[in-house]
Length: 133
Image (cartoon, rainbow, N blue to C red; front, side):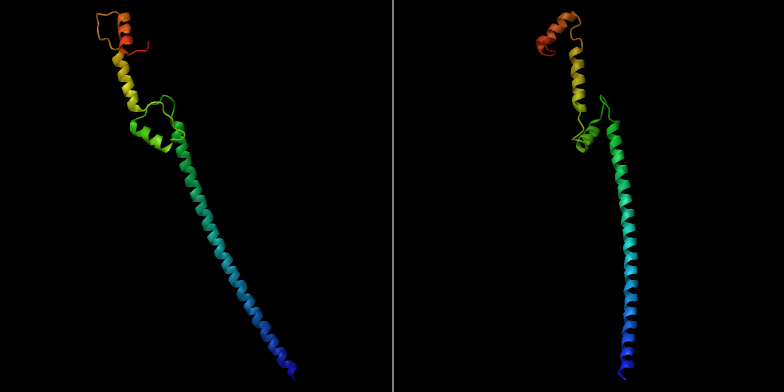
């Protein structure tokens, strides 16, 4: 007499348990699908950032490789390179100093007294401090 009612209750709990288990499995599959989608989005973002970073690094590397010894740079370009690449960029002479040096070189080698001989000219420039003795 009590046996059939217990069996019915037990079967009801088993059915409820199976429904809840199915719901949990469905939700787990749903969460897994969302996580996979987010993971794919993050991977694609990472690939985009990596490729952007790689392109920027390649441009910067090319910029450094374009520089050659004895290349003349404008003052603005010199300052940009010095600011950006101070740890690896070295220029022995700034553009303005180069122009001053050229002007001084031209000035010291320009014949001042055409009546003097070359030896007298060099001797005079050495005494005046234009040329090292």
